[in-house]
Image 1 (tube, helix red, strand yellow):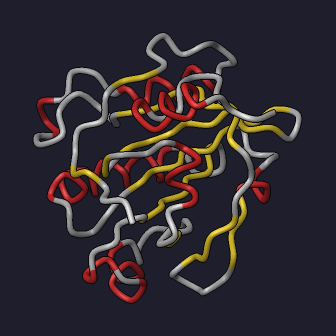
Image 2 (cartoon, rainbow, N blue to C red):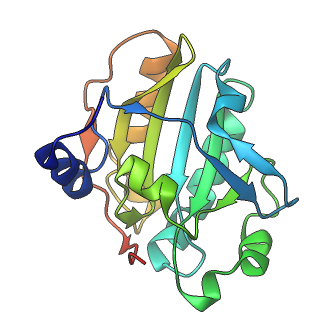
Length: 187
């Protein structure tokens, strides 16, 4: 099915909304050089795709919180980190160092294909995918929580709440929350 110009514009402006189906893609994992496809995780209860960077201050504020989420949901939710930034400092060698301590793929999207598929515009920006029948639909997209700078002042953990709802088979109450962070420059 072909998207209309308006649908493409809305996706580009707002990012992928809840219930948007995400098509399979393949990217290189900078940690081991292997190709990782979204379809590899079709049996996972859910997939948290996080567009991130190692140069954006907001990503660095969230680094420990993301590590906690990965650890808390290990074996239940598959996390994929994607870096679509074009700056010279955002190269594969530097990427491999930044999240070397996490047992998850860190994918290079220098052609920005996944970024366009999701409609990602910020770093960090998260897309929680529901996996069902071999299809991937967005259950939640946007911010990780309501306080990008101070973890101790977080009042609402959007991603964690969405993951809990997804694992319980319930619909997320907040399907889209505006992401705050650095703009990912387009090619």
